Length: 154
Image 1 (cartoon, one colour):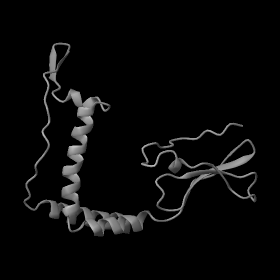
Image 2 (cartoon, one colour):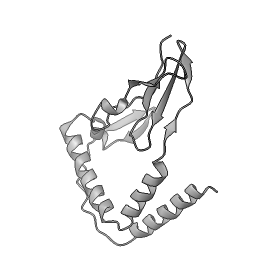
Image 3 (cartoon, helix red, strand yellow):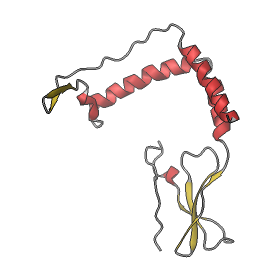
Image 4 (cartoon, one colour):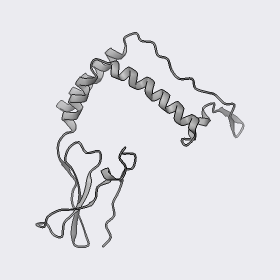
């Protein structure tokens, strides 16, 4: 078993032990609706269907309230900082994708370590300086927009 995997297993175990301590939660209320789907005479109740509308003000308020409850709890864990430091150490290293040649140019992604997303680069040739094609980290300040794939045109 790799050392990293062992470290993560130990950290998760410690976190679960911490979570096992008695603590009461004041969960936000979750409204239930009377929605029943009928699939070939099999009735399936879906009381939380209203949560599927992610653009609704009510759903957004519910999500924010749930997040506030979770964040309050997570920030109270004494082992949280140990987790944060170790995970940061494990992820903080340069990552470079395999280059792909298209239109006579190499294209690749590079992440210096802790960037949310890898930046897309190209070069005129292998010895030329790299050029930033698109930096997906600049697409949205909160990181809600991501770049999943690229397909350079010949």
